Length: 220
Image 1 (tube, helix red, strand yellow):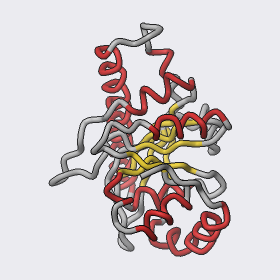
Image 2 (tube, helix red, strand yellow; image 1 turned 180 degrees about the horizontal axis):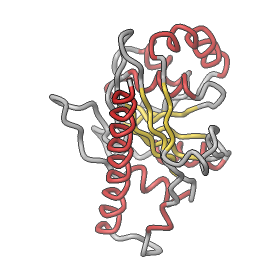
Image 3 (tube, one colour; image 1 turned 45 degrees about the vertical axis):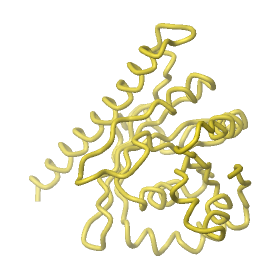
Image 4 (spheres, one colour; image 1 turned 45 degrees about the horizontal axis):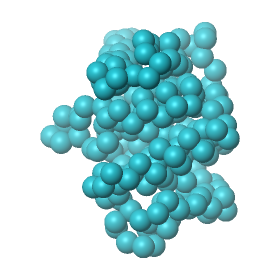
């Protein structure tokens, strides 16, 4: 399956018609790792990197950043749910990642988006948790960041998607992967180290979010 093209009209329609219902359902609450140094707007270009709790994660970030066109990397399993749904995913900006083949067209598509000042959304775990256990990060985000020098904006969502709870998101400070890279042409070992570094920074966001929520609950 080849990469498809986004449709601005379809995407705008989905965001406009879905904004209020999803805002009511999700009621997202944002936290910042360093509020003094972080703006509420995403830099251009940038890579939005987040843990992956649910398929609702896509909806959450589209709702939080309604004025940005987020081009999410989406696994082939979603595109295999039918031609119409596949066309819909491409229309709203989805970038196909085929994990069953050695097709790296998603990297080239991501580079094109970032070169034009756009935003790529990546869930480095690559799939949803099993029995509550997340998967290790995959290196795709490192490869793309190294090729473009685009900053990575790490985020963590608690995945609390229900009318009874608020979806909480911790947003970290920008990461320039070259600041942590020792090699001009990183070896496989260096790529592994950088991938683990990004996973560790995401876990730091989780711990900080849990700490702040616990503090809030203690004040009630």
